[in-house]
Length: 283
Image 1 (cartoon, helix red, strand yellow):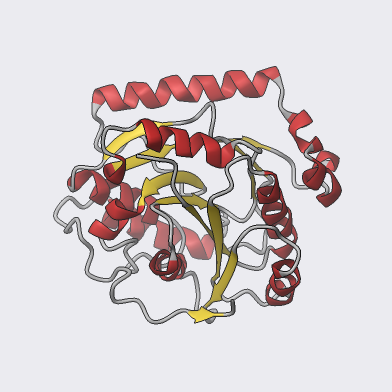
Image 2 (cartoon, rainbow, N blue to C red):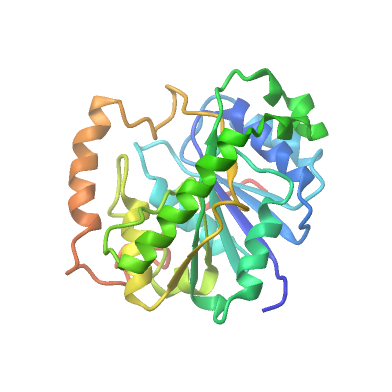
């Protein structure tokens, strides 16, 4: 498989400050054949205006879609973005994930080396960073100075997870490794074969684990790029719908967990991207 277009999909909700940093970091990518699709799950903090401003500043294709705020509907928001994606490789990243310059290049290399790049799921991890870290100002992200944050301890942490992922693969564990929705890549063909994310997952959690289960059910192969396609995680905001500590989200998460590991549910979900309502496309 020759190097081909990557579609980066970022779901956001009321985190325009970290989202702005993340989008600026993609200006530094060594791999240039990519687009970024930001899908908003009803943001009301000025994200629309910020995205319009960035539209004229960034040097890569940027698209922005949104839906009304009717609770946590990440799966639906992401499905709308998948339908619009032009890339053969889909990279999923959260709005607080700051990619290093070789982030997309690293994912591209893994797909390029694969025997069947149309049936591939690639896991990776992140280096946690405090939201207020002074090395992650907009200016330092634009200049690339944020890369000075990486320590030997971080490298060891990533290598540990690389070994752990490979152990999980050898064990062929049906529930491990967990698919971290904040940083992974998958072929667009594989995602479309299972009809995207299952929109029955509302509220917080486990829509990514359900996607993993269904991808493997249709023969998608697993690999990892932990030591090369990692990114920085600036941490969760209290305004985020993805904050697991909020009690109103935890009850739904328990139900979602049951759904995610229910082997009787079909690989191709019923309420997926094909049946999703049309996206409100801002640009």
